[in-house]
Length: 435
Picture 1 (cartoon, rainbow, N blue to C red):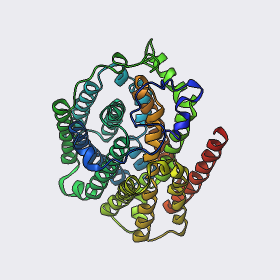
Picture 2 (cartoon, one colour):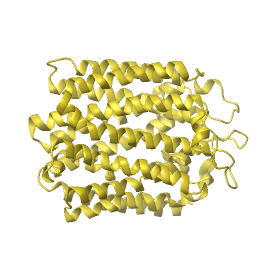
Picture 3 (cartoon, one colour):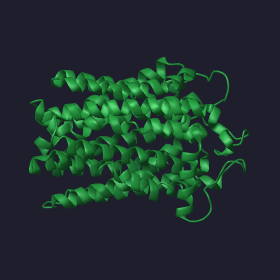
Picture 4 (cartoon, rainbow, N blue to C red):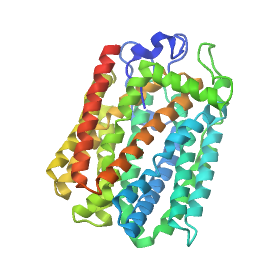
């Protein structure tokens, strides 16, 4: 997630970043030095986190497809299939509220390893023969819940590892990898589940978590908790008191600082343009395809997003990325209005790929967000931003699934895109008034 301008880095003093404190993204004024992907990949810790991400995300998508298809095959209900998919998304919000602050209080590497091992055990239980479907979905909820502190800890580590424009390129690599791993997991997920079965897919997912934990343990440096090594007293440490006070301080920070609030709200627009994922099963059925078509529908947007992230980070100058953030956010939703024409499968995939291309605005949002957030609350802030995004996505998917019970999935997607584009315009107008 992200911020919007460097201008709001110290807006009303709420971000509590000292002007003397080091900026993880480089100088505040003037043109930032351009980095290269080679420079980013020469950093060993980044490579370790990147490989761990490839393993765990690809496995996650495989398990997500397996459970969603299993529910739809057994119930033939678009709503229940959407609920099953949302079970791997919505709990991130609760995890962000309750658990993401752990990575500001404990060493972030330790949090990541603990989460990986916990998720491996939970997914292993899902693969036990004869496990009831309802229990499998509940275990999936727990896996998603534990994913929240892992994601916030990893996101908070990146500014410590990457400086200047390297952070932007590293974020581009991270988002591209995420999307590519989703493409791989979704595209082969349907076929793999049909060929190998749900149990094998889940065991493969558990193995990816174990490998991720091993890689993190071996190649990511151990660091003290964020508040233990602050270079300047004005850089806010983790707020004193219990988890409740820490949570309230994090909420005040992200909602009360325009530099954090605007890009966070733009990031939450993903709830609208990811609706096709929630109705992928009934949409694939309407378009005359089987599990393979569902996999392609899920993969199309992720493929476009991975391509867009690379192009945006390499072809657009750093100072232009923020200016393009709001228009691209509106277009990522608006292009889905084309589904009102109920396009056939090839055209539908093209629209989804195009919408994914515009998702590249998340790079600018992410970089702006980290520029304004203090290190001592970085994990909490990232967790709240990601949690809000996941809650929005899950709620939108469930509502879309319910609507798809009565209306064509294509119409549901078109309406979601129109509403998302209108919200993007509203956020942009509020941003200009605040500036």
